[in-house]
Each structure stands twice: as structure tokens, then as C-alpha cells.
Image 1 (cartoon, rainbow, N blue to C red):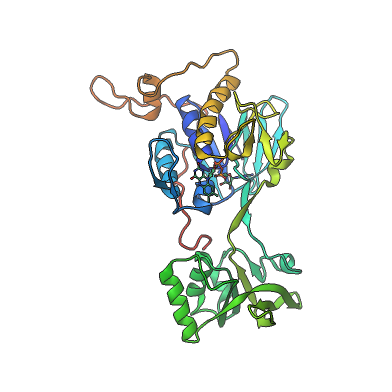
Image 2: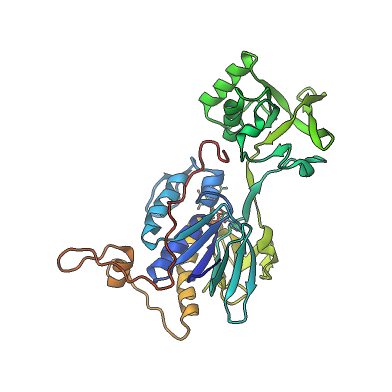
Length: 374
Ligand SMILES: Cc1cc2nc3c(=O)[nH]c(=O)nc-3n(C[C@H](O)[C@H](O)[C@H](O)COP(=O)(O)OP(=O)(O)OC[C@H]3O[C@@H](n4cnc5c(N)ncnc54)[C@H](O)[C@@H]3O)c2cc1C
């Protein structure tokens, strides 16, 4: 099925979310695609609990809270989110539209595309030893699709964050054995869960090894053991049927580099008046865009999103000037925001653009579950 709509926004980080707001004020509806299963970009993926001090008029808030506030702010515009799916290809069509396709096979036909892809799509940090790629999905895993496949198995879990610790705790009763491998005795997980894991180790129910994985040994196409360099420098074999690697995610520009856009050091070159890229109809905002003086800050992304929305509106309605209106005084903006009332005090509902898709059934999660990929 090919979905239609005014605009497709690639990326649900702070810039992509605020872009939805600025488009909504001008009466434009957006589909938003993000490769991770939750909104928030770097704020949620890299530093959810850290305080941010440089958002205008908010002296301090956590990165997670900022995303929740943005989510609330854009709610009236009912963006349709497509999360856990990366935009793979952008192909121009003969009528001036673009066919935008995703990894999971969703397709959009749109006249305007806004790339708010930050540092790129977040991808799993993978184990880089020979044989790991061939075993991926069979004996080497970066996420858990069906936890029962580990019942009765000898497991090695690599990592020191919430996902590694929580999965060790969740599987300890069901696996035959569990060895947790981490390069340090410092963990980035909920202290109570770390304590629980340490108690299980003390009781001999699982094992913790401080070291790093240096190789895999296989037999008949399956994993047999994990070679680990211990802190002492000695390399040891740890027998295992299954290896779960939870080293988190890192951003990679990925497919965006292949869309034919002018790039400058992995960033998309834009006109700083319109945020249009080298391809008419394709715009870029936030960390991913490059122009003289660009600063990779959230507030820069907000400014860029505002100007970009005006440029997109003019691009979609050639020859029509888009007048600046204030949210304080504009009746049409009040209607779009759902805050307008008639003489009786009843809310006036904004006219719905006929092209609008139904809103997503559920609100997207701003934060991953305690075990991100459970
Ligand atoms: C530790 C840390 C602290 C920071 N502190 C501050 C601060 O105090 N103040 C401040 O202003 N800034 C701060 N920043 C920077 C700030 O987080 C970034 O400027 C901001 O997140 C950029 O927002 P964005 O929406 O452009 O991109 P991002 O937040 O990177 O979001 C981009 C999204 O696009 C998605 N994406 C990319 N490619 C694709 C694709 N092909 N298909 C689908 N989805 C895709 C990604 O998965 C990602 O979710 C900090 C950054 C870090 C790492």
C-alpha cells in the first residue's frame, strides 16, 4: 500500500518532532518515520536522564521530559508515526512527487520530504569478530524476538547496561547456564538490578566475567564457545550455545548518503533561508543539515524547523505567499491547535485536510521499556 500525505518527515528526534508542530500550524499533516521503536532521537537514545539547561524558557529539564513536552505540543496535529522502520530509498517520480520506501516495505508518495535524521539511523553496535555476522539471528543476537529460544541453553550475555543485566535476570531461571561478560566492573544499569545480578553470581546461579570477546568458535554452523580475553590478559573459552550482545545503538548516516543529495562531511547541504537541499522538494533540518555557522543544538533545530515549514508550504503552493501569523492571535491557528471556541464557548474543530490519513492507533512511546528490545 502506498500512503499519501502532505509531508514525510524522516526522524523523530527533537527537530523532527518540532517540525511536525510548525507544519501543523500551517495546516500541513506529516508522516514521521524513525528507525528506532520510540520517539526522541539522541535525547532518548543517548542521554534520557541528563538535564538540559539551554532550551529557551525551560531553565532545566531532562532530555526525556523535553521529548514528552514536544509530544504533548504536537498532539493536536495527529502526526502518523511509523517507528522501528528506516527510510531506505527516495526516488523522484515524473510528476514531481517522491516515492519514499522503508526497510519494512511501507511506501509513501509525497511532494515534500523533510530529513531530520540527526547523526543518522540508530543501528545495533555489533560484535566485530570473524563469524559473528554469519551466526546473527541463529546463535548471535542483538535483540530478543522470542525469549523461549534460550530455554535450557548455555548463554553468554555481553554488555553492562540495562538490557544486558535485565535479560540476565529474566533468563537465569530458564537457561542452563548464564555468563555475563563486560569489560569493566562498572555497570550502566539500575543499581538494584546490578545488586540482584551480583547476588545471583555469589550464589553460583550465574557467572560474571570481566573481559572482552575476541573470537567465536563454531561447529556444524552453530556456536560452540566464546573466546574471551580476561582482565589478566589470558584468553579463555566459555562454552555457549547462544550469545546475546547488548552494546546499545550508534548512529550511522546509512541510506541517506545514497539519495543523491549534496553532502559536506556526512551532513546535508541546505539553503539556510529555506532548508531546501540540492534536490527541490527535499528539505533537511536539525543535526543532519549543514550551512555556514551551523551549530548542532536543539534550539537550532527548532529555528530550522520553523523556517523549513514556511518553505515547504510555499513549495507545495507555488505563487501563494505564506503570511506570518502569531499563535496568540490567529483564529485559524487556534482552530488547528484545537484551542478555538465559538460564541457559546464550544470548541471549533479545524477543517480536516482531505488527504489526511487516520491517526496512529496508539501514542508512540517516548522512552524504551526497561529492557529496550524485550
Ligand atoms: C550526551 C549529549 C548531550 C547533549 N546535550 C545537549 C544540550 O544540553 N543542549 C542541546 O541543545 N543539545 C544537546 N545535545 C545535542 C542534541 O541532542 C542534538 O542536537 C539533537 O538531538 C539533534 O536533534 P535531531 O532531531 O536533529 O536529531 P536526532 O536527535 O539525532 O534524531 C534523529 C532521528 O532520526 C532517525 N533516523 C536517521 N536516519 C533515519 C532513516 N534513514 N530512517 C528513519 N529514521 C532515521 C534516528 O533514528 C534518530 O532517532 C546533546 C547530545 C548528546 C549526545
